[in-house]
Image 1: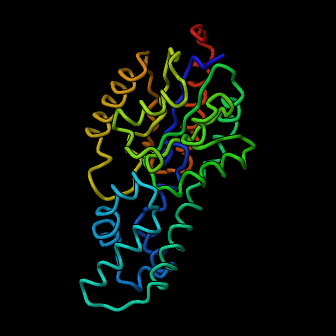
Image 2: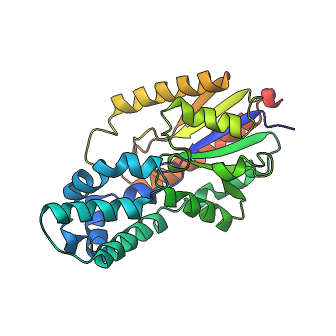
Image 3: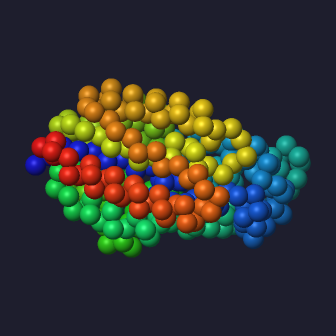
Length: 278
């Protein structure tokens, strides 16, 4: 029987707290140093975001290039502009160390395991982990789920047999567009044969739990993203859309994150018990 309900999880800041903690200035500085990127001139978080990540984000998150490659290319371009001669292998090694550390530290919180396991076994539920991310992230997320004994598959692979895998990882780098673009969801709806979906549940922090020192996580922008995302999903799936904002309000982030997982899991159970299960 085709799934009647769709549950969508955001990744960074929702399933993974570590992914956002990695970007804290103190921790990021440590990683820049240990990877060797600091020795290549990336000596502060500001330089990292403004000169490396921001100029390459579109390419890195909507193509198969990968995080390592865009970092390498960007640093090489900066070195060329400064007429600085650094061996390509030095840049490549530093980029690889940094990206591997970042993705390895972006694990799914273990406290999500019972809920994700339950959802993966539910016959009328389709679970999608949707993320604006680099190409390498897909494999890592699938591996983290497999460690929980949960089968998962990249969206582009699931399209060949949409009914065989309960959890699908939909990464913007694989689909070629970001989540805010209707095409992201239209591709998934068509590829996974989700024409009979009658209800959508979205669990997302809407950028609120981001660690960057900019305005991305302000409440005004978060609320606007929440409204825009709900409207977009409603238009694409022609169905009711419910949202569970996953926003950490407490300064004790680790405990608050766990409490929020517990509260959200209860809400998901209520959702599953809804009479509209089909």
